[in-house]
Every structure is written in structure tokens, then in C-alpha cells.
Image (cartoon, rainbow over all chains, first blue to last red; front, side, top):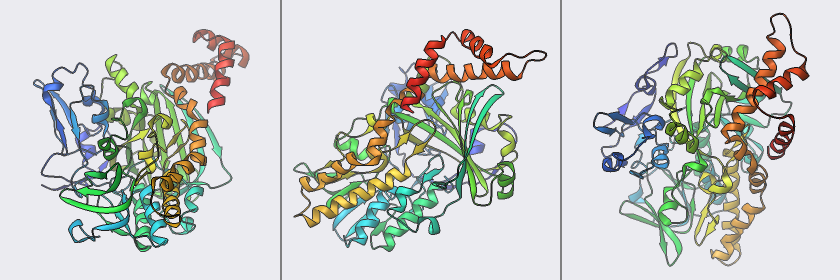
Length: 103
Length: 437
């Protein structure tokens, strides 16, 4: 699966993160580079990943944490802050993942 | 730019990561005639790199004297600004500098320029190759592995960056801890060159580096930043991760981090600089807070040298941040150690260890220890909240009296009383603060 977005938005009113993220470009890997052990998430009291993952990859649903790797910007925050050490984090495979241009 | 399987299987030096540190090392070694392989997991367009926005030139000119003429420089920093924010109240200091020692650049373009230099000097540059492992044999690094492929080298230079998974897998460093790490979140806002030049009052090649403290992070240690590119503005927040976790635990941080950035973008004092701009990019990267705690115990191991962010070589004083020039300079020292080893009987640990010694003798190491108090201070939420508050109250009393206004002395004394700080505490703490910054 590949996704090149690069849809630029005007900064005028509060926006959803999904819309801001549309300015970015990825080449999404078929396999996730991050594995989350949801069993450990169940016992996590504060779930800091929900607030701190800058790409919003961790969402709290009725059934607990739902993780999606596709929009990951590869900063590594989730692995560092996870109090349960529930996250196995790898560099994405060859050439995959986020593709920054102006940063 | 090849892929892995067609390569020779033995190199003098393998460099992992084509950021500033890896590219500098590969460039200097290739120039000296070493057989160098520079490996990058991205597409070689600097696409995994992100930083605030500013680079200090002098240490980089030691590697590339042509930097000023050739590098993709957006604007030279001629104005430094520091602001403190409390609600809609803002205090700003501006310093118009005389010398041009730092510039704003897209790190993606700058790393691309640097890795091209390495390639032109004769290094073999492969992209889209992710290294899984630094291979050790009898306690010595002997090469790298990517998937099923093994490539051998006399020396491996680890320039993998702040997440340093490979070093962690080797057991050389511990798992990253939030105590020494901050998260930077950044937006690039396209506004046009003439807008930037008129609103910041700068010339065509000149720009501003701006550090913002206070409410923009909701009191979480860290701060905001604004850097002017040619026709866009880089802005965003840096948040200390351990403190962010504490704030979440105490219920004081209950919205997504991107909302904090958006609130900063909408702040009425800053917004006019980029109103109605186009959001060209959104990204994030980790940065080092407290380098002296982040450094590996040694910078050189048998067959292995560690450079750049992976080595913890990043200075953060709260008002200046230097990572790219430190990275390049460490790459230079690594290249020199490899050359020294070749000229002195081989790539033994004793010879490569000159890198460790030279890092510890360098201006960088000295600077990191000299400023190590700064991170304690900048990362102290009470300190970070108290002093701006006192100053805000003084300003308010001086300038916002509707009929009467206080003398500066009375304004300060009242402000201290309201913030419950004794005048002597203020003097002694301020002295300690000035000393470590």
C-alpha cells in the first residue's frame, strides 16, 4: 500500500489532526513497524500515548487503545513514554514511512 | 544509489545514517581514500530528518569551507527573540546581532546536500536500506546486517540518530527514558518571502530565531520556537516527555499535543505573522534534554564509533539549541580517528579510542558540561512558571495602571509578595540561574 497525500490546507480555523496530516507524504509499508501489546494497555492507568503521539496513531475507544501505524511520523515518542513497555518499535523497512520535505 | 545485494561485501568503513554526522564522516573518509559505504534508510532526500530550524555554521565550515556559498541556506539569523507568554500578555526581548553565525535551513535539504558531498567524494551511498543489526564478533563490531545481507567493515560508525535502536540492541545503551528526552512538534507555514520580510522587518537573506516560554506549553517544561525560512515559517513546540507524562497523570494535560501547537498558532500575538498561511508540512522528532545523561558511557568501542544524536551530542540551553553543527563536528572527529588508526598500525581499539579522547577534549563536551545546570532549571516547572509570572506582574503594574502606576521598585516588591517569593530568594536563585545558563 502506498499513500502520497500532500494536500495543503490553509491555516484559518481549528482543524482536525487528520486534515493537518494531509499535508504530509508517506510510502506506507504493508507490515507495521510498530507492534502494540494490547494486553498490557488494559492495565495502563493514564495512556499517555493518546495525548503525546503527535500523529494521533493511538486512539482510545470503548474497547481500549486502537493503534494504526499508517500515519506514523517515526518520532519514537510512544516507545519512550509507554509506562507498560507495551510497544515494540522498529525503523520502517527500506525506504518506507514518512517522507519529510521542509523540516 | 543502489540496493544492497549488488554491493561488494567488504568496506573499510560503514556509516549508518546519512544525516549530518554520518555524511560528514563519510565525506572526510572518502576524501582520504577510504572505501566507505554510507547507508540511509530513507530515500536519501533527508526525508527522515526534522529539527527546529537553525544551524550554527562555524564548526561545519571546518568540514565544508564552501558551506556559505553552496549549502541550501534559507536565511541567516540576524535577529534573536525571546518571549514570555502568559495568557494574552507577552514580554519580548529582541537582539539584533551583528555577525551572521547561524542560519535557518530545511534539514531535509541540508542533509541531502551533505550526503551528496560524501557521494561526490567517492563514498558509496545506498538509500532505502534499513540496518537491523550491528554485527559483533569476539566483542568487536565487524559489519552490519540488513535482512539476510551481511556487509563487513573494519570500522562501523553509528550515526543512526536519537532513537539509537541499534545501540540499544547491542546493549551499549539502555532503553530510552523520558527523563532525558523531549518531543518537538513542528508545522511549516508557507506565507511568502515578502510577507516575512515586512512583518519581521528583515532583509532578503536575513531572518529571525525566536524562542517562546510560558503558557504556550501549558506550563510543561519546554517551549515554543519560530524560525523564518525563505518563504515559510517553521513553528512548533518542544515538550519534555517526563514532565508531559506527569502533567497527564495529574489531569493537567488533557488534549492532544497537536492542539497545543494549534493554540500556539492561534495566539493573537503571534498569529499575524502567518495568518492564512498554507500548512505545508506537519512533523515531529525527539530531541535530547540533558545530554550528559544521554551519552553512552564511551564514544568508541572495538570497531565502533558513535556520532551525532546517537552519542548524545546536542546542546539545549533553553534559549539556544545546537545539534547539527555538533553532529558534523563529531563526524569529523570520528573520521580523524579512523585515519589515525590506519596510519598507526591498524583499526585496534587503542587506536580508535582516540575518538573517545578527542570528543572529551572538544568544545562540544566542554559546552555540554558547562551548561548542564540549564536543563535542570529549564525543566523545573516551578522555576519556569514563577519567574515569568513575577515579570508579568511587574509589567502589568508598570504599564496597565488606569489612573495611577507603581514605581518599578514597588511593582517588583508587590509582585514578589503575590508570588510568595522573598527578595533574597530571588537574588540567590537568579544568581544560580545566570551561572548555569
